[in-house]
Length: 400
Image 1 (cartoon, rainbow, N blue to C red):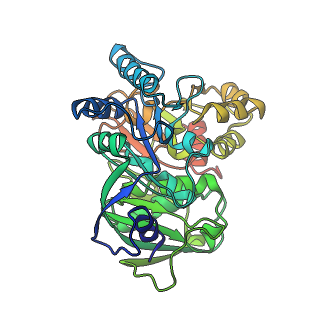
Image 2: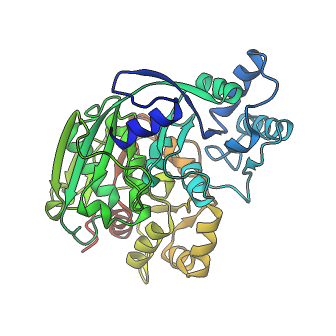
């Protein structure tokens, strides 16, 4: 079996599962945020739920519209808080303790290799970076998990991706996943587990692994997964894969995804002159400390030409950035540095785009209207490209 099949078999009490099997599996961790959890709480109460299955295995994080941007978002956050208090949920992280959920949960050590994790957020697949099976579910599914501690699945087939070679300068996890999605398409891994492996992955830092798995959903995948470095769960040599692709990463340049899809990728050398109005550096995809270090190394001693918003993914990362002097570099360069929030990624707040405005962002989606006006445009790139673009006022290669 593949690592994904092994985890699903273990959590459903079966010796073996194969792609296409329907199973009822035990959940190790269930996640909800300020947009999705209130709907799950409503369904929980509607179904007659009184007590959650285990208050220690539920995580509630108000991160999408936090700090509250208006009355409606304040009410959503309040509903989350009251439910956490009533159910004695200890893993409730409010402002000051919070962070963007998919950065905060691994930081807190709440996800481990071999775990089965569900979250009412599509980028829950991030935790595959530590060797877990992690996937997004709907709010009604989350409500059922709150009550029973179980969730049903159709076992996905596994699509194997092998990367070899040493990464060129300025190329990281964001470029690997954008390149891969550009190769297979926005539905190229539809309801499959994307398994990332090869010598490049074995040498890839954790932050880049999180980025890689975070965007598996953008290829239509059920999950993304990387084998843990220590032998805990790994795929058997004779596993059956639905497909396998190999990439020589030495040939990959920094990638830029053109609107309106993350699969619409081009190497930076073929982008051309594209003027921008805004830069966003942050999100659950690229708001970790290594991302901020890369951006700061390019911005140091320079000034940005356009509106530039930097968002550390968690309070701990924010503090690290302060201690290392990164925040000072960003502010002296003319950037705005925000408290941790999903904010502009979903067009929530802290950087909503007006008509005809153009943004380059380290976030994970560039759909029409994703960051504001349907007439705005969003390009996706890594933190180095985003920082260089902020300085140039157009999409630019970091070497410039």
